[in-house]
Picture: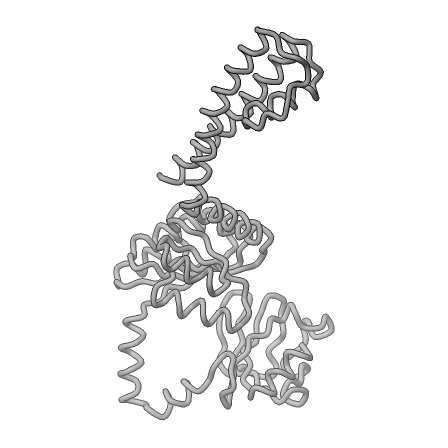
Length: 334
């Protein structure tokens, strides 16, 4: 609300400043037959109270008009200067510059990921995405967290993620992914509904805290719904039942310096000659040392440890396992 008031008052000050400038120029031209340059010069030195000297000797009428112009100028320009000073001191001027600069960068993005909320889960998501060097835009309404994001150099939009306006500012129309990790399930539901309406093709991942919300989020358009509390409890239970298996799985990461990493390879990104060929024809094990451990069909069906005779169809994906140097070789080749 304060921002809007400051903004409107600033615009009023600019308007009245231009109005008195026009009044002075018009008055000197119409009533006293001054040229435009002479009228502009007299108006500026009069309303700024500099008073270098008259262009022409003043008559009574000119003196009266100039006195009126001085009084109006003192009032309006005094108002404008005090308002602009207050505007600067409040930080609104620099804030608006920052918002415009960030908004311009966001408008240039395409295929980025929007993260709604910078709480505990949001912070983890942003950290992981940054480690993958993904393009991110965070939506957050807490000013302290916005300041933290600015310091970290993360593009952000201050506002309520449940509104279409905020999502559009964050670039939902061109985003590939949206992750909503707001504390409230109802807020996450609103975000999913709005985001799915604005972008039918984006992948939407939502956090949920209640079982009853899971199905609602899926119906609203979420591709994946994650329940952190449930995952944490299940993980701890599995550490009791199958500790070695879980510890081995924990060592498998997407990226890092661990002994084994996972990588997703899109068939669409492979050289054209491999399209409709088999996994055996790809010969990935020999070329990179990596092993294909999973296959995702265009219909989103997963095959664990697929047979080498499985065909590489358009829009399908391969899940590959390998050591860091093998994954690096894989990225170079494919």
